[in-house]
Structures are given as C-alpha cells and as structure tokens.
Length: 434
Image 1 (cartoon, helix red, strand yellow):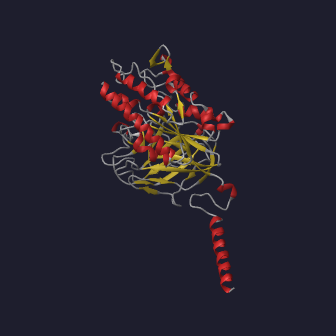
Image 2 (spheres, helix red, strand yellow):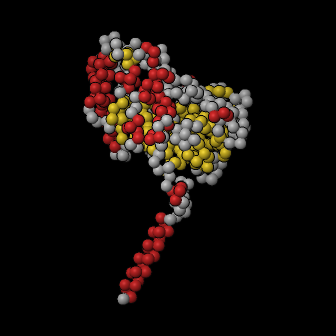
C-alpha cells in the first residue's frame, strides 16, 4: 500500500513539473508561452536580401572604404519594404562573407519620412533602439549572423521600414557582406547619427549592406513564399525606390484578395546567380539551406532561375545538352530537399533571350537547351505546380524573343510592365492553400 502511495505521489509531482514547463511564462524568442494571445503567433520572415560578397565596384563609396577597413565611424541608413505586417519585429544582420568580425555599435528602427522608400529622413517620434541579448551593441562573428531581440514596433503590410546602424570601429576587412542589387537608395555619414531625424549631407548609394532579414511576429495563418532567382527576380529593369520587381507586384496583388493577405513574399534572388555553380553569390544548390530552408514560416518556394547557367555555358550542342541535363537534376535536388521540410515547390519556366548579347547564339544551341528545360518543367510532374512565365511574356510571333514592349532594352531583363505580367502569371489559388 505504501508503495502505491509513493508511486502516486511521484506521478503527481512529475505531472506538476510537466504542467509548469508547458506553462512557463517566458521564452527566449519573445513569445511568452503563458500568454495565449502571444503564444498562438509565430515568427515570419517578411523581408530578405540574399547575402553576397561585395564586389570592388559595389563597395561603399569614398571615404567609407579605406585601405584595410570599411565603414569606420559610419552611420548607415537603409530602407526596406516589408511584406506581411505585425506588432513585433526583429532584425538579422549577416557577416556571411566578412573577412573579420563585424562590430555593430548601435542600431535603431523607424518609419521613413512620408512612408517612402530610399529616403534619408525618418518620421519624428518613430525611432526605437534595437538590442541584442539586452545590449545596445553586438559583434557578428565571421561567417555568422546575429538576430536582434524582439521589439514592439507595429508594421502594416507593405510598409517601408528604416534601419539605421552605426559602426564605430567599422569592419577591419575589405571583405564585406551586402546585397548590391537593392534598387533602393541607402545613406552613409561619418559619426553616430543613428538618432538624427535627417541625415543631411549624407552620401547616397544604391546598395544594401549587412542587413539580411526582417521578421515579424504574426498570427498562425501567416506563411511565407520564398523565391529562388537571379536578376529577373532581383529586379534589374525595375524602378529604383519603386518596389516594382515582380515579387513586389505579386505581394501587392495578394494583398488585394482576402484569401491571400496572410502571405509574406521573401525575395531570395541576386543578379548573375546560377543554379549549379557560384557566380554573383553562391549557386542555388549551395545556398538553398541558408536562403530558404532556414527561414521562418516558409511554406512554399518558387524556383525561377537557370538562364544564367545556360548563358554562361559554351554555345555548343554537347555543352548545352550537358547543362540542360544538369539543370534538371539540380531542380530535382531542390524539390527533394524542400519537400523534406514540408515546403511545396513551384517551377517557373525560363524566359527567352533571343536578341540578347551575349546569351543569344546564332546557331540556337542555348535556345534549344532552354526549350528542353522548359519542356521538363512543364511536363515532368516533379514540381507541385508550374508557373509558365515564358508563355506570359514571349512574343507569339517569335517565341525565342520577349515581346518588344516588355524588356528594358537588352532582350533579357524586363521592365515594370513585364514584371507585372510575371506577377499576374502566379495563380493565387496555389498560395491560398498555405
């Protein structure tokens, strides 16, 4: 009898311990487990910029790049456009390609003046300090990233956000992490001006540096669709500070429909990027874990790249047959790895490049390879769905070329109207399931 009582008492104690653990009122990520309204929410990646090693001509302009260090005693103010909104946010800074540790002395967020992208002024009274493990400063190790503490800061969907960082010591290396194809103006000024309402006299530059992600705490239904892409997704040919890349226009479209307003769009593209090999930034196969699988709340993935793989391979039958076969195998790898994480994968057909120098070859070997790849995307059944971007913007009278009114002059990259047609070619019903 005594043994039974002891056993019962042990079960009660164990049960109480489990209940106490489950009902613990505080979590390190800022989502209090004891608060039903808060614990029901989750972190969602609402903006992203693929980290890259900065090329020499994309480094911060003089005098912000020295002989051995960069951004010394420099305030860096940048604007980014979030997709889905929330009432708490956190930032991620990347030192993926830095040649030394990255010391951030102070970071603040604010709303930009008049809500505009690419401005150096902020709305008075909106600036808030960002902390890291409770401290105002942090150091990002080489190859790593740092996530800020959660900050109460309300953001509506589609809001432009200003992020201002000050680096007292700068980075003691000329290997700098950035996203050169920002199509958004940033500002540099010597001294600590993180709390200034306007950066008068600052030097403008159309690149993003160091900042890689913004996350928001959102309701359970909110998910993110990520896009793996190249310059066509990064927005070459779009309007600087216009936020009219095709993923931007897709998000705008989703916001107009109640069934898709819960979807964030995460643009993980870079100019010159390839699937199989590194180019401007790591290839898609090399960066899939970092840029998609490790991101918050990604439930769907659009794969829209491969044209640079074809365009940089030798224009011979053997070389193009080989790269087409390798691309198909690469897509299959992306699908398998994403499916293992429960992510649905949609394949977008490759756009024509007839008339482009240097991709268009007179013998048409690259065009033949493009047709081979597109036939597989459309007909293999391996993707969960197909987005026929090729059909949306090609010239019906000459399918090897884009419609003349849709490109930016080089017969490869689109203009804002062309990007609108890509956004329209994504069936909203696919995303609504998320």
